[in-house]
Image 1: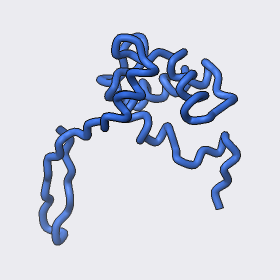
Image 2: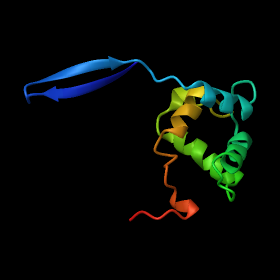
Image 3: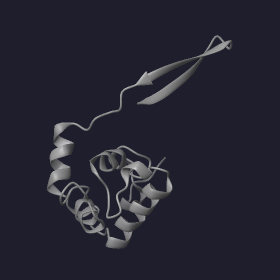
Length: 110
């Protein structure tokens, strides 16, 4: 469980426990399609980037960079020796490593 802390009236803090977010069924199905035995490797992630996210120029090196950035950002419990598990893939999809407007795809921020 994760915890959220809020300051209340500048006097004290209130801490709430939140249940971990679980991936919806369609995300689970997508992960099943692009993984082997519950682990998504670099090659499968690269195929996912090209086929689903339409990053047509994505290489295996780009997928390896994503894996490395997830590993370095202290998501060690979601990172298997060979790749990402379901929880890691879900966190990748909605994390900072996977922005909704990607400058690599020609999207400009104004």
